[in-house]
Image (cartoon, rainbow, N blue to C red; front, side, top):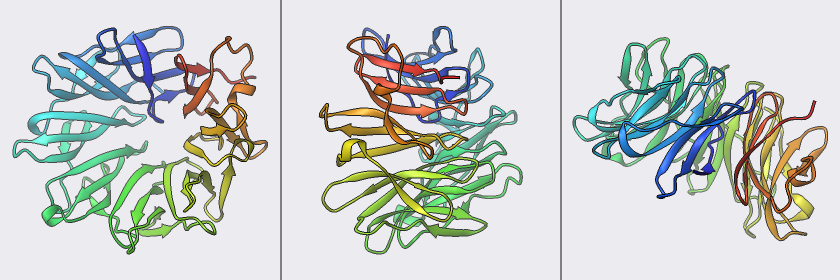
Length: 345
């Protein structure tokens, strides 16, 4: 099997990684690397499966096909557990909490697509904002789920919050002017996402205590996109400029700053941040004229991971850093497939 896809939620401490690879026939296969060996999670009798999110207990959320080729959300805890659907044909697991609760989306008996929350009591339909679709994209450790849902006539979509502790209907988080989408939430309930303002430009936001705050743009920037938030409230994402430059950014709750690029190139991305504020992503390395995996820290700035890894095998290039665990382990895409980097003591 070859491995090529790891979501930013697909890593945990002790070098554990989940993601999606391809077998010799080109079928998608969900895998779990437990720090020692790689396990094919299997399917429900079908061909394909994908894994997205891994918690500290080694539990995984994703989806796998049944014998009819229909996707069903799963919860993996050593066994692949079919979570069923909301009455329709398919469901897709996307996020898992530290307690093993799963969120995602499913077809309903009416053929609509609705976000769901699955706990020991079964799959809950989170509904919509009046339209016929909603999608859950992230969840925190206390059972709060975020994503986006469509309004009447499917004429718009807004970021939403669902709190499993109350079971109340999803809350419309509003917008900065047009559409909005929530992409991450921390355990304090701070939510980050992206919203188009009245002129259609994409801006990053942080929602807190009932208010959506525009993170703003740096001078000359055209748009901004948030990707993740850690429990300290640090937000990372990417800023674009009219000349085509894209530069990773960090927002510390007060100040927005660029994280730079390698060698002054025109491109860097930030995809994930851990509890200690370590940011991972990629940047174009001008000397190599190629994309390289990078890590950023407030103590040393942005560095090329290819220059920091000891005993990197000949011919291996670290192309992009995909996810980072709280103990500093990093999942990377290389020119030969996936790898995981162990932090130095």
